[in-house]
Every structure is written in structure tokens, then in C-alpha cells.
Image (cartoon, rainbow, N blue to C red; front, side):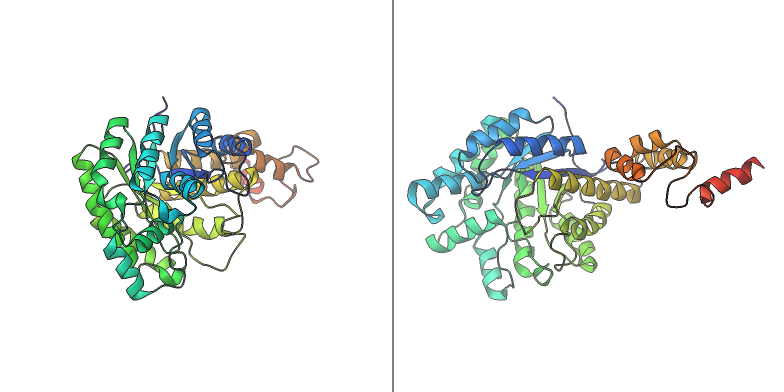
Length: 379
């Protein structure tokens, strides 16, 4: 057992999403990505598999992982319902709850449950309108099911039964934000806020049963609205640990969304978010490969550490000071080992390098400010 704490007063954690898709159903590449995420420093992974045989995928990831693993039961319930009955709208409550119990039995540490969507949230969505409507995959499954069947969300209606399962198997609920904004124009609208109010109610009900809770957050949010989103979550959800995807602070950088999201992640982490879900360069474009996963985790480790520094976490500054001292003293090996990505730092350093002297190729042997400073000190 390798316990990991998520919440106030602890360092900001980083989650990496992996999992099969219908286009790439093979589990072996996902196990490679799992190891890449762990090697890069991920504190958690989520299995978002939607390919064939999700049970095997989920169990393989849980068995191989040395960090906590999250799942999204509605994905498996949807895939199996489509196979059996042809459409997600034919899913029954038992289809969904059987998967929740099975994944809990298999050892999932936390589960994303989209139980904050109810009829009031759907009404707020349809009354106000959006550019991108519902962008959460689980949220779209539930919304479509509710509208087709003219029925309440079973995850909301029978929430106490979910708490029974989570209490029995000690599973943390990650309250899913099924109506998170998928673009800046939809950020902090009535549907998002109405769902957040529901999540606050569900948080308290879980705590009353002794079930641990995280609350998931947006999404795509412009920089000037991030503080408002964090403050609303703290107020409405009783300061439960917040778990956010980014947020992305602009919509116009496909291929670079690990950067656009890390900007928002750094700020919302500083303001109080407990765990950051990474975004890879492939976001909105395709299933990430091993290198995309590694890049996403490293990018988010930077964001999380920057947030820890800004919050004054007592251990955060120690590493920065140690690396700075190694850099000034030209202790290259120590500098690389203290960095978040030693292999990348070493590779860049070695490009075009012809000597082990006290300089890099940016300034050369005669114009390095740190070398000149050290010479002045000596003289």
C-alpha cells in the first residue's frame, strides 16, 4: 500500500488519464502509458477505457499500477448497453449500478460518478443555451438518457445506493462535472453553477456516511474567471478537495493545449485546487501516445509545483534552492537530478557540447554571467 493524500495543506497532486478507445482497443499500449505516467511522477491515473473488454483493461491497469487508480463506471455501462441493446438510451439502472459495484470490487480507488445532473440542471442548460452544449462524455450519456426516457438521472435519484457501495469498499467518489464548459464562452453559466450546487449537497450526504469525496471542476475558463470558479466551489461544496481538468484559458491552440491548460492549472492550484488532471498535446485531436502522456505529466508537475510554491508549501522551495545552488556551482549532474525531467535536461545540455567546462553553449566560456560572478567573488 502506498497511501496518497489529496486535499488542503498537502502538495497539489497530478492525475494522468489513460485507457483504450473503440479505435485503439488494445490494452498493452495503455500499460506502457501507465508506466510512463508513473515514471514521470503522476500521483494517480484514471482508466477512461471505452474499447472492447473494458473489464480486462480496468483490471490490468489496477493490478499494474503503484499509484491510485480512478474509473468512470458509466463508460463501461454505456459500451455494454450498446452491445446488448443497440443504444445508450436503453441502459437500465441495474446496468449502471452493477458496473459500479464490480469496479469497486476490482479495487478502484476513486470513481467519477456523474450524479450532479438532474432535471433542474437540464432545464438551466436548455433555457440558457451554449455554443458547445455537453462536452463531458459521461455527462452526454446521462443527458441523452434523461431526455430520451423523460426520467430523472438514476445516479442522482438513487445516490444513497452508490454511497452503500462506496462505503462497503472504501471507494472515494469523484463527483463528476457533467456540464463542465467546453469553451470559454460557456464558462460559469447557469447549468454549470446549478450542477455545482447539486454537488455541494451530494458532498455533504457522502460525508454524513463516512464516504470520501472529491469534486470535479472545469474545463475551459478564461483567466479572469478562475478565481470566481474556485471561490464558488469552496463555498458551495464546503471546501471539499477540488479536482480540475486544466482549466484551459484559451480555445485557439490545438496541439498546445497542455500549455494553455497548465496556465489555468497553475492559477487554480494556487487558489486551492487539490488535484490537477493533466491535458496532453493531443487534447481534442486524438488518443495520446506514450510521449504525449509523459509530456502531459511533466507539464502538470510544473504547474502543481508552481502552485505549491505560491501557496507557501514548506517543502516546495527546498528543491528550487538546491537546484539553483547546483546551477550556480556548475554541478551539472546535481542540477539534472533535481529537475522534473532529468533526461530532457541532459539531452539538451549535451547537444553541441564539446567540453565539460563551466559554461553551456548559450553563453560560451567567456560570457557566462554566473561564471563571471564566481570569478569576481574569488578575486
